[in-house]
Length: 150
Image (cartoon, rainbow, N blue to C red):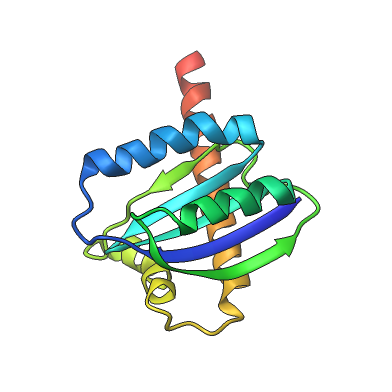
């Protein structure tokens, strides 16, 4: 199982419709490719973690690198893992605001990564942060589902 984490720049004023198109395509195609992941869009950049079989992940990353909506793509982490960390998300998504103290605290590191201000070793720390975010979100989703079922 391959886990790949990258950052790329994009337009600061990326239209919501364009972002919705990216998410819709990812959520439709990723299950067919056996890929799970999480996309963060923040202040003119993307931070994304992808998981799946090595060939599928690498081919998807190459398509992303040639997509005109991304530029200055940089790998932060490319590693073999025993199992998926984001099993339930064909493509999770978050668009945090740096004006929100809660978001800025957790996702401010995403902006620093996009700007290339982090050490090469930061990829592992960011991956753990995103995996923790996933677990919290999934537990919230399960609690809501249980509450609705009651």
